[in-house]
Image: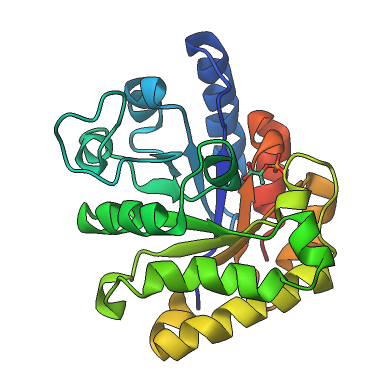
Length: 253
Ligand code: PEP
């Protein structure tokens, strides 16, 4: 059985007060549902709130992580945060190569591969995001784009070091737009990604959780998560509302 995971990506949202409210609600609701929850839960939060979240979630069933990291270990990289700094705050997860990092901050496949390697070396579980833009989908390039994003990372790694790897397929046209991929559309790409992974390493392909992300809501989560190769979700907007996030987690069968 593969691990199931639902991770929230808070993006650049929150405040000490709002986080405390959201986390208290998540803790209360998740404790009520603990018997029926099949997925691990995690929240990926802005850097400054790591001490707060580590303190509030310590010992709970909700893990936490960051939304990016530096490819460097330490030194003269003003404004950057390293993998070992994330480990200091007991982060379990870190998102790598989110489409907003690729598009707004111009992160390249090479840089993303280096970041992912830094995460793995520090013992973090990287959530590697891949996905095509609308233009790429419409010109029939979806598979070549996601394969290139995946291959550029895998080519730098040894399969034996990838046991904590998580991959999220996030079509860029579905992120924050309210347009979700149809379950069959998402399944098609997930199956293709798993088969690409199996060319790298069969056992790894079987055990790696493949998440879907892009406008997942409580009312579409069940049909997406019901697909054979979808092992959970990466959730943006809906992860900021406790009841919605928990309902999405509960939709994992
Ligand atoms: C995301 O930011 O990874 C995401 C999937 O956002 P949303 O759920 O809001 O589309």
